[in-house]
Amino acid sequence: MHDNALIYAQQHKAQFLSELKEWLAVPSISTLPEHTPDMYKAAAWVARQMEGIGLENVALKPTGGHPIVYGDWLHALNAPTILIYGHYDVQPVDPLDEWQTPPFEPSERQGYLYGRGTSDDKGQIFIHLKAVESYLKTNGNLPVNVKFLIEGEEEIGSKHLADFIRQHKAMLRADIALVSDTHIQGPDQPSITYGLRGLAYLEVELTGPAHDLHSGSFGGAVANPLEVLCRMIASLKDNLGHITIPGFYGRVRTLSPQERAELARIPYGETELMQETGVPRPFGEAGFSINERIGARPTLEVHGIQGGFVGKGSKTVIPARASAKISMRLVPDQNFQDITRLFTQHIQLIAPDTVHVKVTDLTGGDGIVIDPHLPALQAAARAYEKAFGQSPIFTLTGGSIPVVADFKKLLSIDTVLMGFGLSDDNLHAPNERYLLQNFYRGIETSINYLVEVRGQ
Image 1 (spheres, rainbow, N blue to C red):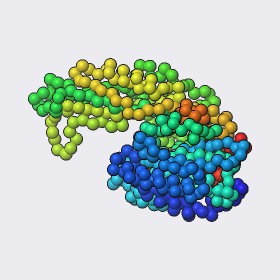
Image 2: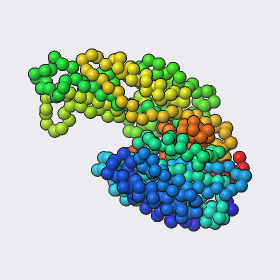
Image 3: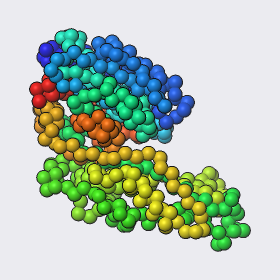
Image 4: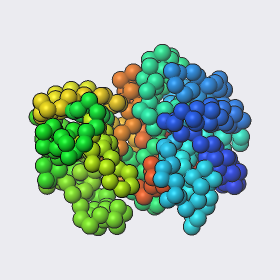
């Protein structure tokens, strides 16, 4: 049964790649209203895939935003049920002129598949659909029961997902969740993420005069909101990257010696960071390694500032308004709602009375840690080793996947984070890519996992 599935996957590589390219060609950018028809098109496309490979109860489930695609196969007696999650929405493609090939015309170069969504996340969730197909087309059944939940709003904060889960608990009931939306340590070195950071994302807006003012007539007599905002932002961290918001570190989880030792195994440090990013030297909290800073410590980052005149030539104005978008990555035990409150209180406290301040909560979610000794994670380790020939490293990841915390809170299930991307896949950036070798090895790993998790 297992061998037949592996042979089928090997024989149908060209078909699998062709199908993935077809899905990637749909510009399913969830944040842009003009792409709403494409969102439905991408959802309908994967629904047809599910039906074609033999999944049942396939449906596009409406939400307050983009639809969720559901399908299942539930005929494995006395076997666990795996809830497999992914997302079909993708990030915008700006700046378009930095793409070497069109973002929605997938192309192959030097063993990589290039295009928006290749690694995040169409290419990764497609792995599990093809693993299930390989079983059903050769054996007519699966070692375990599976449920697929593929959403269209992950890139905009999964706005309606938690409510959907609450409303469909019976439909989504499972023993474990499986998510492939992370990366491994290298082309030949698999890894299992057992912890994710949470997120608090806010916008700070300052207003001063009722309208833009002539700087010659009013400069020196009124506060410039843009200058005030810059000073406020600069005060949020010290020169070593330590966040200055009172109470921010109150619930930060301390790494155990065993966890620090496991993170030290990761073949990634200052040299690799500089090579990958192009920065002249690393930056961050003293006393923590690069991997600890990335995965196990909280952060605060400014993503954009608006205000004043930025066009060609000169225009001497004092802007009436300035705003900034700021996020904080949070480690497990930090609550994003608490951090949002602390941030808001601090911003209001440090804002001078020469401007008005407004803080808007844009999105957020809690981080999570999963016991690496959990049988389902150990089953994933065995599946990786069979496909890659290397045992995986257990690691913490700096990104956020809010659905993992939702699964724990709302369905009382843990999640196996089985990634197949690489850290240099250019996620959210031009020239996003996906190593084809690991696309195929991912399918093999997923086939292995369906067997291993049954016998856990």
